[in-house]
Image (cartoon, rainbow, N blue to C red; front, side, top):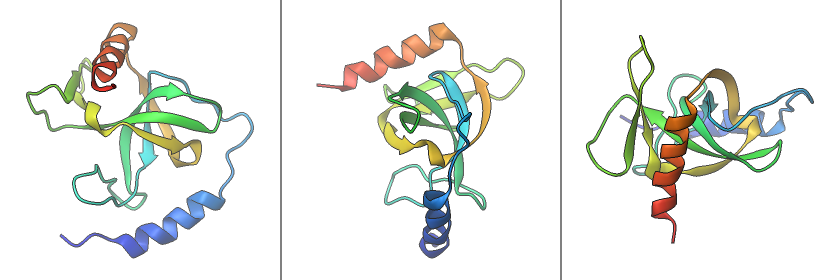
Length: 131
């Protein structure tokens, strides 16, 4: 499948020039749809017309900048994946190795919030990767 870099670049220009309303809020532990874009190699890509993918907000630095972890449905049994239980819905999997700093301009719409215990477990697993 050929990647649509030109389409993504045009959308990225629109995202960059957009402004979020002053009352736009996001919090750690929330899962959002996010315009991640078309990425290189094995970096997690977004899908659909907004090149979007669900992400977990790991750390909020201020109202503009945050660390996120992308989510997928594909589970691999190793230290870099963490399955998040969602009750009646199909489980999501957090890709711990794909931590990324983004602008709040990439956030599209909130989906839900994960549980505190799961979130603390995810944070502890990510900390193990840091020197």
